[in-house]
Image 1 (cartoon, rainbow, N blue to C red):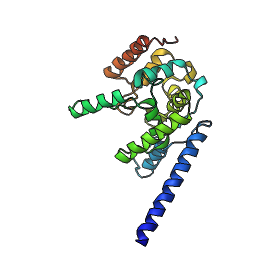
Image 2: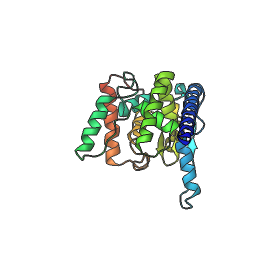
Image 3: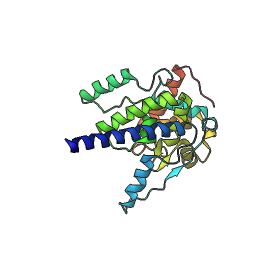
Image 4: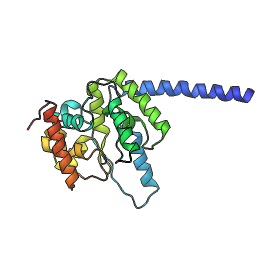
Length: 230
């Protein structure tokens, strides 16, 4: 019984410090750029144990005011059209994804931009029920403690657009040789089109599927009445 009691106290202590550190981290990153994410560290760690994999990590943080509005609108149209209406979770999309997956169709997720931001900013890229639980926890935290625009800002700075290319500024410089502030509507829609799988889908060599998705994103923006800059 003494061992059980000791173990229980250690678990409580761990949970207490986990909650303290996680909440303080989310509050801190509300105001300052995230220097590196667990996903980026995981990528660097993989290379340390794989001599054949050499990926240069490219990332540049930019404030939302220095990112073209085209890019913000493109990712919302592509990934989460109800972003400004929900509190981190789109339950209708989740139910639809579950039904599709149960029917054996192409696997589709129901993750919102908030969920993707929580996952990419705070968690490792492993898939497990524990990680999904932690993703939900951090999603609630950032919805409570960050503004919606801050969530989009972090999302655009930590999301991967290609192998080792993190953030829209690095992507704009790498693919278009220009800052993210100068992205056109076509360029923004193309970047957003590869986000389901930026390793499989290529910005610099887009497949017919990626091109169709780019055009779909532009149409969705028009239907949403958001409009795009030229």
